Structures are given as C-alpha cells and as structure tokens.
Length: 540
Image 1 (spheres, rainbow, N blue to C red):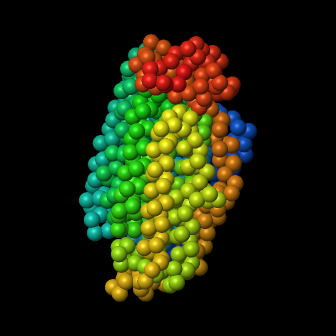
Image 2 (cartoon, helix red, strand yellow; image 1 turned 90 degrees about the vertical axis):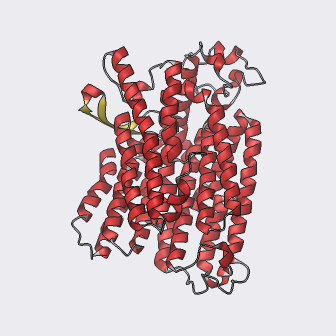
Image 3 (cartoon, one colour; image 1 turned 135 degrees about the horizontal axis):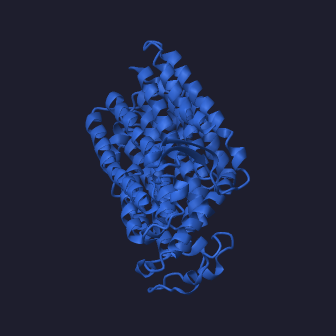
C-alpha cells in the first residue's frame, strides 16, 4: 500500500505526458483524479495505526544496493502518517487551483504530481539514502515551476532557492556517507536503515558533527531563522499553487527531518543543541512577526506569518516532552491547512487583477463578502483564535516549551500577541475602510462557486479540528513516546559527556523523579536523571 501511495502521483504524471498540451481540461481532470485517489488510499493507513503502536507499520523492504547499505525501505508510524495524509489531502486543492494556469498547464500539473511523489517519499523512507533521493527530488520541480511560471523576478528567486538548498543538502550527503563508512568499519557492513541506526550508540563527538550536517539541510528547508534568505523571493515570485505547496508541505519536510532523523540518530547531540535550536526558533518567531507587522505586500505578510509559525513548531519539538512533540505534529497539520487556504485565496485575488499593496486596498468586505469571510476565517485560525484549528496546536506547543523552559514560553507569547496585531492589520487594510481612488481592487468580483468548492474542505478542517483535535495527538502519542525513549536512552548512554551539556530537559516533560512510567525503556530512569543537577537551576 505504501508503494502504491508513493508512486501513484508519478504514474499520473507519466500518463499526463501523453495528453496533448491543448487539452488542459483533460490534463486537469486526470491530475485531480490522481490526487483524490491517492488521498483515499492514504486514508486506509489509519485503521492499522489506531491501536497506538509506536513502531513502524506497513513496512516494505527490498534490497537495492546492499553492498552500500542501500535498501528500498518504507514505513509509517503515528507521526509520519499525518505528514502523508497532509500531503495527499493538500495536493487536491493545490492541483485543482493549478487549473487556472493558462500557459502549458499540462507541464505545470506534471511537475506538481512529481513534487507530490517526492514529498511523500521523504515522509515514508526509512533508509537514509532513499530519503536523500526524495529530498533532492523535491528541488527539481520547485525550481522548474518558479522559473517557468513565476513573477518578474522568478529567475533570481529560483536560483537563490536552488543554491541554498543544494549547498545545505551537500552536508546531508556528507553525513550520510560518514554513517555508511563508520558502520562499515565497526560492524563489518554499511548500515543506512533508520530502524537499525537508531539503536546504535554513536560516539558523542560524532553525533555533534552529524547533527550539524543533517540539521543545516533541515533548517534551510523549513526555513529556520536565519537560514531563510531564499524564502521571501521564492514565496513572492512563485505561482499561488507552488507557494501553497512550499509553505503547506515542503516546510514540514524540514521539521519532520529533525523529529524523525536527528532525534533518533543523534539524541545526545539533539539535547546538547536544544538551547541553540530553541533560541533560533524563538528568534524566527519574533522576526517573522515583526516583518509581517510592517510589510505592505499582502503576500509578504502571509509569507512571514507562515515563517513565524513554523519556527514556533521547531521551538516546541525541541522542548523534548510529550506536549511539545504532539503539539508539533498537530500544528504541522494545522499550519499546512491554514497556509494553503491563505495562499490560494491570495492567488484567486491576483487572478482578478488586484494589487498586493495594502495602501491601495480597502472596502472589499462589501464588494466581495464571500472572499472576505473565508479570508477572515483563515486569518483568525492563523492567529490562534479558540474554536479554530490553530489554537490547540499553539497551546500544546507553548505548554511543552513552558514545562522545559518557562522563560522561553513567556517570550514566545509576545509573537502570539504580534500575530493578532498583523492579522487584524491585514484584515482592516484589505476589507474595511474606504477604497482608495486609485485602488487596484475596485473592479474585483467575488469568488465563484467552483472556487468555494475548492476551498470548502480546507475550511471544514479549520473548524472541525478546532472543535475536535483529539484524534491527531491520540494517534501520534505512541510515536512521540518512542521518540522520547530513544532520546533519553541516548542521553543516558553519554554519561561521560553529560556534564558538558547546558541543560537536560525534563524526561517526559517533568522532573526526573516524577517522570511518567512508560515513557522510558527499561533501566533508562537511572541515577543520571535522579541525581545529576545542573548549575544555574536547571532541571534534575
């Protein structure tokens, strides 16, 4: 089933190649049908994970280049299954919106389906080389989509995106080769399967260097502050469906990389660097919020709002407790839905010829009530209004951060306040007040029924998850506990290096003596967690 889910979009892309370029309607129908079928197939994974198991399920493994430790190895757990569902679900409105592309629509849809397969591959791969193949494959369609269908400065934006991404991925490749060589020397054969590598106690100094190598690639993809220089150009110049995919799906690949690979392979290094990563996440939250608060380009406001929110997710997962990881998974789903809704709405407005300059907008609430209502609902979800899906994820993330470092959570609340300010500024500037005499949206028409139908599933989830978010944390809890077990076991094995760490977060989110049973493997609640006390009031 995993191979079918993974390669069905690629099969659809291959079939599209035989559709004449002029028959855009046929190409669009085939691409949309492929996306819908792939989503329905991915839903069949949920019953197999409903028992709360923390191990990988539906695994498929076949030798590929065994002499180099390279296998075709797929699997899902309670964490990755939601990334798969998010990708297959969001691909439906993104591909539907791509019908509006007037030039070479068939080629555009082919690249979007290839991008869907590449994204699914990063979430399904359990062999590091296979993961790297799909990780790099994501770059090709994005680059071609920006260059071929982007705005006036598309070439510069695409070049910056590809240079940043390839440079960072080079370190990921070097880290992968290092793991292959180290395992070959010490174990007699190269090993690149995640399930085996996560049980091997790598030396602490090696973990440090490999964490940095992997982490750079993940940080650029998110993007994490300050590795975001490619982001404004790519987000602003890319067509709306591509921007939606970048923010809604590809940014999650970087966060997932930290959660799945960095935490399981280099647990002691991950804990060692948590102050740095948490600090960068906090800085990104505040920086993104301040830029969104001052920007006059509506798409730039939404882009930096998205940037601020993904940095909050990084801050939350590096709290190393159940609330932080569960909140991170939930908020990745929520952020993807909200970001896609906002960017697609902006794309629909741009198709009607409106300007993105806030100073030339206003009064659209009376002129386009449906557009105004949907945009307001998505913006309120983005700022975390209770009753909408953004609230519960942010709450869990901030609770997780508070249990590890209360002062970080207090500062992070400032970004939440700023989110309210820039969201209200955006809504007021577009929809209320008089329309300027030279406004670029005076003749704008309201959404058509087809566009409302395209957006309807996104808004049903915005409201539905807001009122009933429980299934996502419930299914991801086992995977989160397993991740925490590996992290704390890895830290326990580094007793000789533990005193060089700045702070060891509380196991399971609480102090060592009160850590819930079942969150650690047998023997992991050793004297280390009960008696080692750090200077400066750190947790026990």
